[in-house]
Length: 480
Image (tube, rainbow, N blue to C red):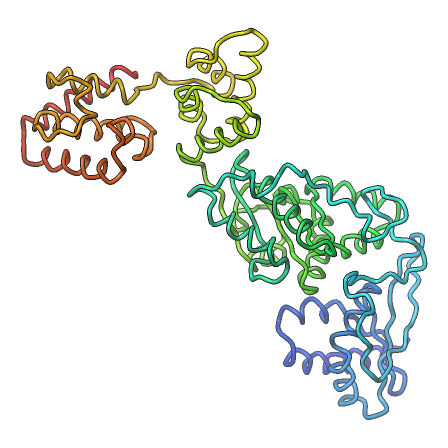
């Protein structure tokens, strides 16, 4: 090829790109036109090179009319466009040419597949399932992870609601991709797999796949070693709902990120659903290509926070119900109180508690729970209970503790009850609802009112303020 010919074909294609850029959105332009390379110009026939068979088919199906009009505008009515497609054939890159017709290609006869199946050899399944057929792709899901077994609380309500919406209409919501992020053991994998299991249940024609990011990387490395990168890409292009766990492990793996970028683009452009989990929000992911991070931000990023005390209680009770066991309320509260940051450890403590009680034939009580919980947390600070606070306040004001639970308006009792609620809120991790339950079943609004009443009295009554300070010192000494 002469330099003149090369310059001419590049000039023609540059002129075409200027027109195309004005007729497609920026993202489509970057994805489908920037990778194209002009190869040669012979008369009115322009040959361009595209990176894959799928790339050619996508252009033919979605942009053939725009390409045809653009080429004719540059080269006249007799203009024709030809493609040179790089096909990986046993590690030898042998380009071959396909003439594009002057009419739009018909729609795919099998829209569910949405990936080229014309390579001449069966596509290899990296999950080692011989004789690939779409229906044979194992989802790699744990059937125990469902929405029914996922306990909802304030910490996860947004993520659960978004996940349920995605599972109800995969690829049909604005939550694409759905990125679920949060710390270790907060239920990211459970929620992601619950989405997949619900899709499988409600959409039998859709292919769902759950894959940890490290497994994806290892499969890609194997594909590189075996000259099977095209098969690897085409396999993942078959998926309708792709769930990738722990995407933070893609960090600093440039080639893995590059291949995932192209898979992501294809699935997203095809209206397929992507669900990703991470230990941090996309904006905080380091070692990631900016173009990939920008795609992670297209949909919704939903946070899984640390469950509050009531949610932790509900999680334990759900597991107890599913396992057909019953534990004393004070034991459940103790475990939930002391293990606050990790649901996995919370459930692990419950399992260990049951195992110890069964193997050693011990009664399950708070003392046994204390021994078990020590294995899950570095140290358990001496706790102050609501009962202790009630007794300390009642002793100080010479009031019988039982009176705090009665419906009486006697000033001394009301004052002791309000102050006990105030101190319980400040010195324990119990929710307002739990605190109210320790005072004769009062609701959270009563606790809020009591706390405010104590603050108001401290502002106007010096003696009362000194009493509060003295009681606070006594409680602080008891836990130090």
